[in-house]
Length: 414
Image (tube, rainbow, N blue to C red; front, side):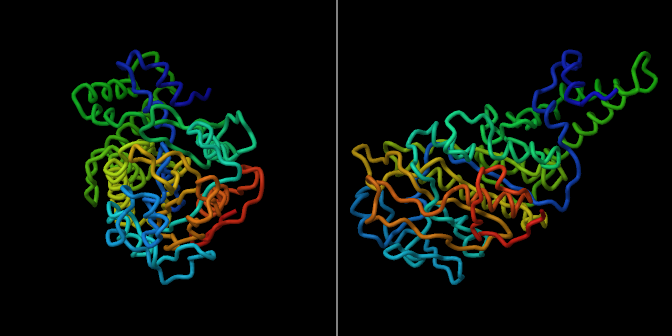
């Protein structure tokens, strides 16, 4: 008789003083996977202002449209590239005219090292400016379906039948992107890991050890086996949590989540997909300082994570992608903020990145009802991640064939 660890822990939770739900889920995922590629997806919720992330600092239209929000010409961190990745359309700014927001110094250093790819003008046809609808479209990769109930990553996990485990880190509920016919655990509260190191946590672990006692009367062999394996996984998780990291992380919730992902990767945790969220990007009013703080938080945390996986010797197999459901409008509003827009840059950080700019920066003098026009369909980005990172055929998941965007060195495995 086979009983999963999840069912075992759920059945014995009351006797163990209440096993945290994330442990019930995460215990199923631990296994060694030292040579497989890993995808880390970072969702920037609220609609990140792409124009103040990748700044066309030489464009007079940019400065005229944003009298209070425009990044000064001398402050932007220039994204000049000597590689062959840049594609510039007629009238579009070149790398010499583009720069990161000045709060993104840590990420700019990685860009200069060739570890950051900036995919410009990403969006989709007939865009929605609704947070909910646009996020659903990005999560499901099916703009034509109004009520899709499975996500692009959830479908990939299900199709691989246990060979592509995923883990959501820090969200209150599982993102739609991970919904599907296969189970994906959510690690909701990292404080539970600290709890397991306390006296109460040690009591919980000792009770699991008691269940593993072969002399205990009336215990089925399967119960002892499950208790032994579950205890081993708990000890593994606790050990990873308490392990020192080879780099220092800044003090933020995002950094804490990425630090934990780095520890899991370094400890041989079996997930191939990690999903995290950074909110607060719906900057309709008083945007300048708030957005700068968000971009600084993003930049510092992602740079620390990349240094972490580099120190582990894993940067070549770990790819982080950061996206938002849409950008902001070109012209600032009367509340010193920006309203919902369309096209946006996507950032990719990896030891495999073909660093530099990919695609053309949208022109500011050729707008669609005040919005930037997209040049790259986000599903082409997904196709590249599915095929070149996860080794999964993309067409069955995306519903159509999309040409890959060459922001990674190619290592397809299917």
